[in-house]
Length: 316
Image (cartoon, rainbow, N blue to C red):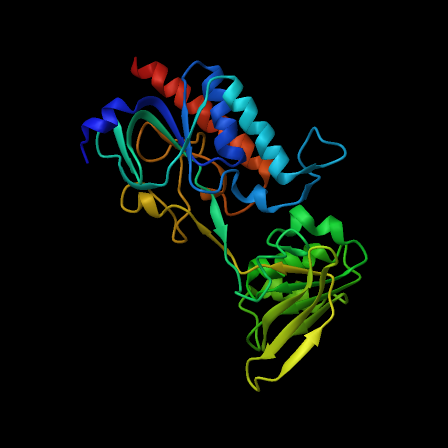
């Protein structure tokens, strides 16, 4: 993928992704005078741009809107010398240095690459599901559970993630429905036992969510459910819906180039953010299937940036 245009767009550090991980990496690398280029696709800011109130990011005792937090982080990165670019990278070549990246509009090259491309939540495809995201629909219990104290909550899913989120949400919910499209959970035995023994949780078997009822002003008011066996339609009154059917890491660009686990999450060494290719570092949700929080993403962005700085210093 050698391209003379890439040489004209050469940078010491390129950061892919503009969520908390990518922007934190940009702040640290720009303060180290590395003049990073941060590239993001059509939607800047990562998953936090779909979140309304963020109450668990340190430093904001009254909370802050997700998009506003990302705008502030972006301004901070630019203040120290980060260049922002809008392009969708469609191909990377990490087989030689400098690393080559091909975008839809330009080609680039870099000495060090920080990958913070995030992960995409899986959705059930119900009507109004995306429209009410952040207004009663959520994909993160630890992020948004506290907004629904003493409310009726529904969780969709049947695996470990759904059972874990359901159990966590009972700290806040007055009642919780766990909706699964089959008649048995896929979760591990210990997680199933935890759910089945919780008096706040009621299992709703063989149901598929067709529609999320409500609007952005009133929030979620209920769910239209279809029975997967009889095809009968029913309504379940709830105040919130948490979709817990997993995430897809945005790592497809690096297939057969970087090591990843069976789910596609990028791997790095135990004591750093460096991947199997020296000079390539990873941070944020593309490498984290456990915590998936803005603050942990930011922390991993710091690690990736310091790792890149030290690696570049060692090269020159």
